[in-house]
Length: 185
Image 1 (cartoon, rainbow, N blue to C red):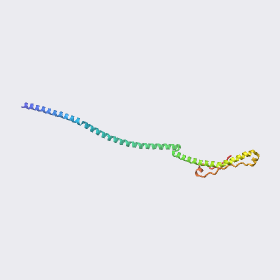
Image 2 (image 1 turned 30 degrees about the horizontal axis):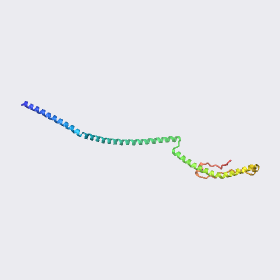
Image 3 (image 1 turned 60 degrees about the vertical axis):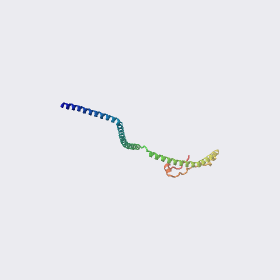
Image 4 (image 1 turned 180 degrees about the vertical axis):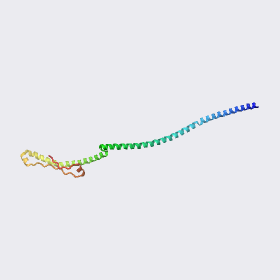
């Protein structure tokens, strides 16, 4: 009986092993079929999750870059200001005029040009009557040359013409030095 029991138990043991192997084999086939069936779904889910992570990472990187760029711009602006200040000080110590100084001088030159123009126009208008007097004196001189002896005794020399009085204005006083009347020789 022991032999029968051993035989039976070996037979049963073999059967149990066969059944277990069969179940393992079927589980493997089922897993393979399931993976094939749901593999694309899992793959697509992994791709979507990867895209979401990439989007979050890119957004965080962009924010960090913006912060760094802002700090760099602020630093650059300060560096530029320091440079401009130093150049301005160096130019000032060398006596180079600034744009403001040149603009101020340009404005002053324009004002003085206007004053000179007015004075020139006033002088020209005053010289026109004097030119008539000189022309009439010249015609008299030509007439007297015909009779030189009588002309010298009878015709005194013409008095030099005086310039008209200059208008008194602040700009005229500072621009034109005071001088006596000019005498034509």
